[in-house]
Amino acid sequence: MSLLHGILNVVYVFMQLFTGAIGVYQIIMSVFGFWHRKEKVIHGAKKRFAVIIPGHNEERVVGPLVDSLKAQEYPAELFDVHLIADNCTDHTADVGRLHGAIVHEREDKEKRGKGFAIEWILERFQASGEQYDAIVMFDADNLVDPAFLTIMNDKLCRGHKVIQGYLGIKNPFDTWVSVSMAISYWFSNRMWQKARQNLRLSCSLGGTGLCVDYPLLQEMGWEATGLTEDLEFGVRCVERGVIPIWAHDAKVYDEKPTDILSSFRQRLRWMQGHFHCARHHMVPLLRQGLREGSLVKLDAGIYLFQPARFLILFLTSIMMLLQISTPKDTVMAQVTHLLPTDFWVGVNVFMYLQMPIALLLERVNWRAYFGLPILPFFLWTWGPVTLQAFFTKANRKWSHTVHKRAIRLDQMRSR
Image (cartoon, rainbow, N blue to C red; front, side, top):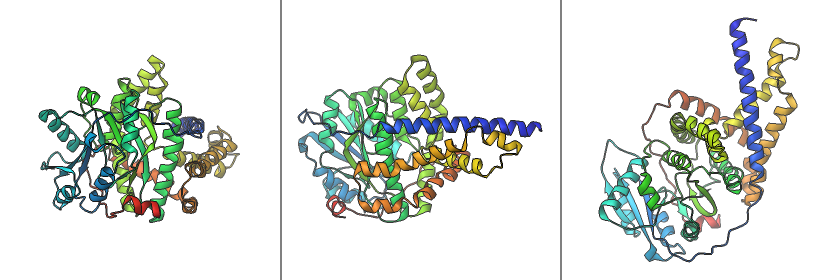
């Protein structure tokens, strides 16, 4: 056996052991997402919110979002809706004013993007002396459930500092791409986020539907201006012992791309930001977790190590194919069969079955089940997305996702 062959075999053995361990870890963790009981709101309206909407050329979609916020089941005097018209060349600011938002127009060609816009508005709040108890962030294409602020108020009154709302999809049945994304989110909400909440672990922040205690934010500073500003801020919270929690009943709905190229570009940006964040925070989190015996920090470090949870499916499916296709009487088979074929088949079957189970638990529309046969192909596209992101992770240029559907909350419910 050549030296190169030996090195490749060692690498492959490591891949098998690591991928197998991560796959089993996620299966075990997902079991804890089976249970959800709606938490009763026990605190009356008390907290004052600043609702922040960073938007770049969002005239088509920002109106319904502001309307859904104005329709909150929460006292209107206890929250303000602030729209940041960030380097806009359309009528985003005019639409925001028409629907009742406080509009802040920002022009900065160098520091463009959501993270910089949030940092800018927080500086304006501090300079003005405006008093808020918490900051809530939404993307301009969102729709917000009427109970959202009521639930966030309750969580803050219980002592929580960073709260992530449920990430729903407002256009799940437009195309096979949007339904695949929707299934991925339903799975993530239940088998990833809710599971970790049940285990008292940190949830991962989703960039929208995020509520942060304002004094904590003033103490920490935002300092998250990368391609995945939500991930950066969440990791910094975990490092300092603040555990972001998941609010399963506080729902926000997001528009997802309807074609594969737009989806590829959006996910590429996510993965580039993820790699950048992992480079700076993964090792410190794992080291702190081991030293302090903190499962919260270890779990957050493991999340950073695997840039996309569906990359696990991609890797385990490759392992299974190699296992099945390699003749057992070859030298290579001694490596590929380190873990038995039944193990890889079982891991893939169990992980894929989590998808329909999540749909059942979340009680989604029956049409979602027709997206399951095409889902494996969509999950496989995470492989090339992540691979390209790895080689382009130095890219820090923010790219705007164009939103086209002016769906209203009542329209979405009637579909």
